[in-house]
Length: 212
Image 1 (tube, rainbow, N blue to C red):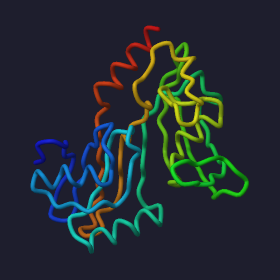
Image 2: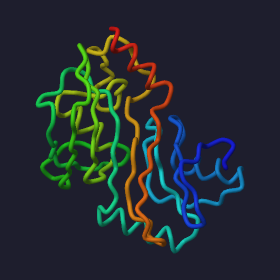
Image 3: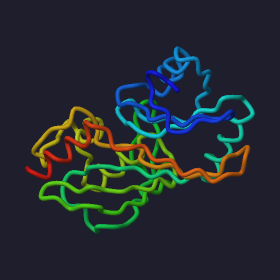
Image 4: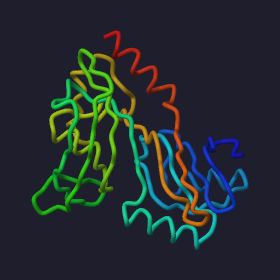
């Protein structure tokens, strides 16, 4: 068990951690695990300010197999998000093509096909709690799609021009959490369903927004 990074699942081949917000997926997270005696290899990434479930391999063969699952979109990735405003329709899919440009991305007809499915879990006076299934995995996809649709996430500064006006209570970071992962273990064939609980800062933000 890691002393500094919560472990959601671990076996001889891979580990799933609950990445804290503010930690870089690479290189900071593997370095933190290494200090706790876990030599883990990165497979995918979450933005620095995004928390939640993240998979790392414990050997090169498993990393290659997991990377194949990601390329083939064989992992179900579900996110929790708090979006500004009342998202309409309450359930749907955003298909805006995304062009990745270094550290940023933008919606562009020149971009790659992108798909984000969402469902409203709770409609608040000034915000919407969303469950999001990430179908494709472009850079900053959920954040960019939500902002382009007119419902930037609470705490969004990169794609909402620093505005956080419709959520009365501000968020220190983007209100996005990698909530659940479901995939077939590439070495054992077992179906894994892993959930990262909503962290304290997002729970507190949600309660303040409910009261606002």
